[in-house]
Image 1 (cartoon, one colour):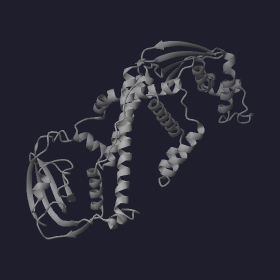
Image 2 (cartoon, helix red, strand yellow; image 1 turned 180 degrees about the vertical axis):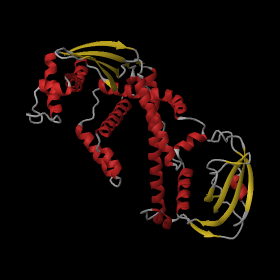
Image 3 (cartoon, helix red, strand yellow; image 1 turned 60 degrees about the vertical axis):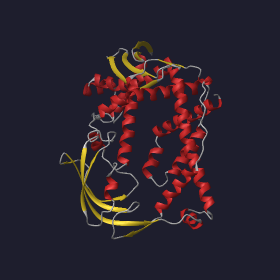
Image 4 (spheres, one colour; image 1 turned 45 degrees about the horizontal axis):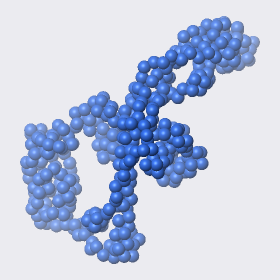
Length: 425
């Protein structure tokens, strides 16, 4: 096998791979055997037809094409290994020459994992911020827990703050109903501020069965750009008014919430949970700050489009999952922001390139510092994931795939790299 390499723009290379006629012979034998199994030729058992006899029936080029496919499948990975090339994405392969008693020549264009010249990643200084928990934060969490255990009582009086009400609502802009603006038996806890400013205040003193028109203006920063800053009319009917009785904050409340004997125990657990949450967020901030500095000090080869496009697809899928998890159709979301998927990809491109550079830098640091994830560690993490998702058969099946295994290995390696950076900065 002879391999010729030619450099192309954007971290791509062209390989011309030549397989001699002698090297091609085993693949011809395999092709003859495979084709002959389905060929019904009198006087020969299936799979035992000689080349010349089979060629007269199916054509010798058909056999050679089958042999070429088998040869490419086997020799292409060897050519990459021989040239020490690390590729990304699918190769573009085309047969350049195929003829009886001649060498097989094929061309492969592949995108390479871009090389990076790292800056002084061990000399980066980025301090982690100290974490503090204020009493107000604990009280706020306790308040949310009280609402979860509150008891509702239907009342025949005007709406007051903290009441839980059910309303029918129709929303109009320029006297035209807006998409997604109609809701029946919509539940609102008055005073929590989940609607645009002025809406919940306008409900105060309304009674069950009463209807009203509420005229307001959408905030300029409203998430739906087509509605931001525009006048709106809400036609509202109150279906029920419920007073919410919250439990007193005492030892009994602590027992109600969890396995706590005393209120102090509940407070300590809340404080610990808040610390863990804040520490996690601060660690994420620290990681982003560190990788930003590493990227700014590093020099990259040109990034192949295939890597950026793949990352864009991931980002779009992540956004779609977030939208659907909130109960909204992604198509409706795109309509509400007046953008297409292509528009979002253009917006996300810079972030996608940064994510690609991050992955390349972390991989290179792992290589330089001999940071690896061994099979024992990987298997242990996979078993943890299976236990965590044991009630979801679909996720369990995904965890078993080779694709997920490779993904998890990359995540674990990145985690180790950041642990290394934390110790060396």
